[in-house]
Length: 188
Image 1: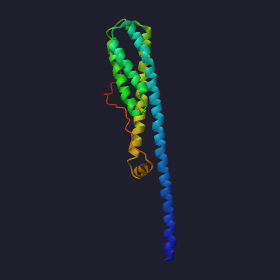
Image 2: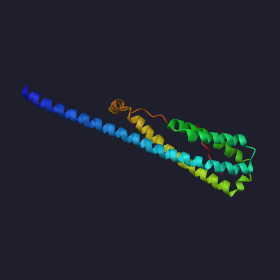
Image 3: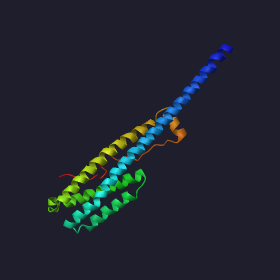
Image 4: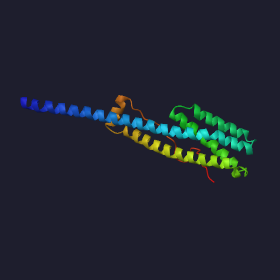
């Protein structure tokens, strides 16, 4: 009996230590993934802000050629303000969709004004908007990938147990990538 106890007790201690080490490793891994999601969100956020900063200049360039498009300018400014006022990722995603749609409508309207296509300032702004759209697309794709990995990880055993113990929750602040997000497509 003593021999069994001498074998079982150390084995239980080893299993207990292994379980604690695994728990710590899973917790640290999930925490690192949360940090990666936050860091990538910051890059997305910066790209969104970069595009939003270009819009007033673009509106001014278009206003010179199309001053009677005031309702469109108002919608674009409201959408830009909504993006600036949104703080949570889900709210920023929705505000971005709205801004992208308003920007796309503005760009469609500019096709009715051939004099704009001759303006160097307007063409430079279009290039900058196109570049910012590309940055947004790249950063949001990376963000969605990191977020998908995190969300998948917290559903796998034993990570799901650790996630529920420590309060790691699913994050659904995804950008849609099905083309239905109203993203402005800048083409020449």
